[in-house]
Amino acid sequence: MDFNLVTLWHETTVPGKLVIVVLAIMGVYMLAIGIERFLTFSRARSRSLEFVLSLQQRLRDHNIKGAFELSQQKPQNPISVVIEAALREYMEGLEALKQHGPHDVGDFDLVDNVNRAIDRVKEREIADLKRGLSGLATIGSTAPFVGLFGTVVGIIAVFSNMKVTGGGGIAAVAGGIGEALVVTAAGLLVAIPAVMMFNYFTNAIDNFVVDMNETTSELISFMLREGRKAA
Image (cartoon, rainbow, N blue to C red; front, side):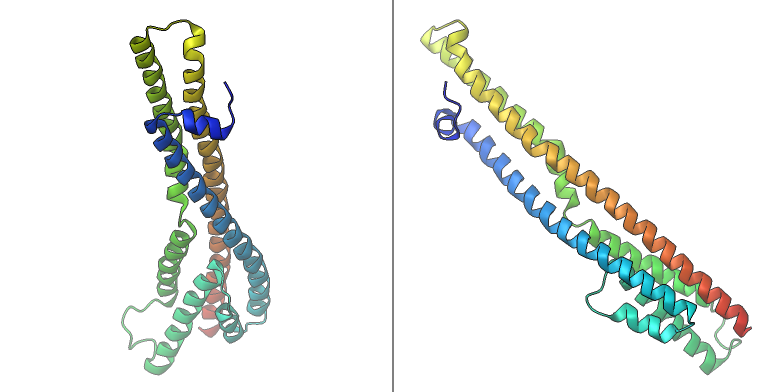
C-alpha cells in the first residue's frame, strides 16, 4: 500500500474523510491561536519589562504624575493597564480628601479602594491573556479521541468488507487497518502540540500574574509610605 496523502485520501471511507477534515480544522485553529498568542505574549513581555523599570524610577523620584503618564503611554501592556487604574484611583482619592477633608468622606480607605481597582482590572487583563487557550485545551483533549473514532470506523469498514467478500488473512486487512491507524496518528499529531502550547502559555500567564502582583505590591507600599509622610 502506498501511504502518500493523495492515495490515502482517495482510499479512505467517507467517515474517515470527515474525521480528517475535522482534524485539519483543529490543526489550523491550533496554529492560528498559537502564533497569535506567541506574538502577543512576546510583545507584552518586552513592553512590561521596560515599563516596570521606568515605573520604579518614577516612584523613587516620588513622581506620581509622571508614573501615571507613563502608564497611559501607547501601546499599553497588561501591567501598565493595571497600574494606570491603580494610580487613577489613588489620584482621584487624594483629590477627594483635599476637597472634603479626611473627616467628611465617611469610612473612605484610599488604599483599600486602590486594591479593589487593581483586583478588578487585573482579572480582566488575565482573562484577555487567556483568550483562545480554552480552544487549545479542547483540541488537546479531544483530538486523540477524534482520531480514535476514525480508526474504529475504518476497522469496522475493513471487517465489513471481509464479511462481504469472504476474504481473509493479514494481507486482506493490512491496507485498511493501516489507513485507519493513520487517522489515529493524525489525531495525536494535532493533540500533542496543542497540549504543549496550552502549558507554555499557561506558564507565561502565571509569570505575568507574578509580575503584576510584585509591581502592584510595590506601588501599594509606596502609597502607604506617602500616606505616613502626609500624616
